[in-house]
Length: 209
Image (cartoon, rainbow, N blue to C red; front, side, top):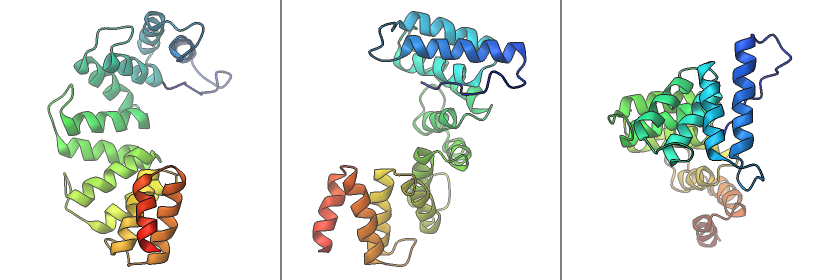
């Protein structure tokens, strides 16, 4: 769920304020284990938020369609709402749309569009998108294979604490893919990843000792 943290006391229009408040009310009904949890009401408020163009509401309604809570599960509807939100600049929605294009969920598979939305999300600092974009460069999916760009994406995500990215970056440093081989850096990133519970990183640390 995405709460709209826009300052309602700032210069928002009446429509923007209504959309913001409707979205946040929907989030309050969705919250897991909450005493007021009600998926039907959450869906109703998110739909109201979308009527006022609220991007967080669009993302959240799309999520409900993805999981089938408060609405009938529908991947096409999920894609449509997430794309509306993504095109308003929501980084979580951009990441979701990228995944949908990548796997053909609710939309025809399109790797080029997948990469485009990963990049849009990554540029806003979304660590999952940064990691995924690095993977696309690593595998040459939708882009020319480039270990340097792969390393850049993995490092951006790793620096935000993504344990999978930390593990992958450790591997890049260990084997010298896209970066200069550096056992000290490999050890550093494997250690950080292992501290997050990444078991494979722990195995690499054992082998490095």
